[in-house]
Image (tube, rainbow, N blue to C red):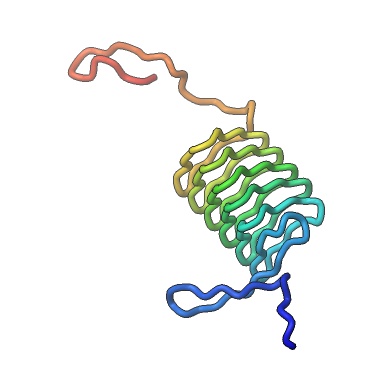
Length: 152
């Protein structure tokens, strides 16, 4: 009788390439080759952590999420259900990403940032640490000409 190893899963993509994933002991998420997840982090079922990705200490990642190749998630981060974190993206410590959000490739999200559910962060975006943001205010100003209202 042949026994199946429940801690290993092989997935074949459309091009016929196969990847072997290992189950993380906390939550049962699937880890690609070279992915590193700290032991005290929780990875939800049906969540994929791709090759070379790093998940810090004390993180909680919900079900059905996908942490793409070479992404880094800092310590004590919370990522909701069905979230995509793009290739090479860096999330700082104490970041909160709401469910059903998409973070593009090579984005940089600073420490302590809170992204609500259904948020879309474009490729290469830079969001500074919480509390350190300096930018335009949301007030409007009047100008002369065809654009009578412009964001400041």
